[in-house]
Length: 330
Image (cartoon, rainbow, N blue to C red; front, side, top):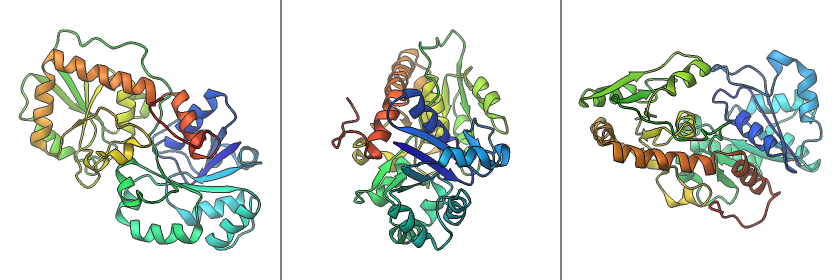
């Protein structure tokens, strides 16, 4: 079976990381990822038309069993790309979707977060007309579609997880926050909270390339993901930090539900719903024993759920290649 992600840009790198993880597992499911333009964060990408031209993209989409809109929610550009890639003749989104299903191609869509969160009623109307076979949501958005049998959650797998626990050392607790968009991530709230914590080193890291940020983050013990109550979730930065066995603090109240556990057990991210709670969580982590307990929980979760093995098993199930029943804890 072959599944191909298609869209304007994969700026979070999520679809490309899922693709790499699935392919490294070397099973019956294969994936490709096609974007029109490059990621703004300089993530590794499979096929980028802006960089590689049309030839590799046409090769990547050939004989696709699934075509999945990759998360930018730009449906008009998605269907134009599908036409440009010679999958189907141009028409309305509904007509093109119908033609692809007539050819035996199943269709999926993935939402990145903000666009759906702010316009979920509009997207529900669009999605019903198009008739996607699967819809993939960040864990915090599952609350809008929990009754939809076609809905699934997703997380971002990682290319590697550290093979041993990093030692904390004898210096002060080192804490960082790595926002791609500081105002959207609640950076002012986080920085306000950190003013009430003594005896730790704190830094906001922003405006860096992915490789530089990844290297800098490895020198810290704790990563504060986001503090935006309207988002109420954890993002790519949190998954990257867990894979490095960092303790993660975030406001993820919308994802704090057993409905998420049905698909992927919730990560052991420490909850903080305000700048005061950010300060409280960081202050507690100054205790070496408590920090170690949280660090081990991060590492063990990442070793099970951010891996190629789990990613392959999960996406095989979501795309109807795996077993009909699903137990994420196996």
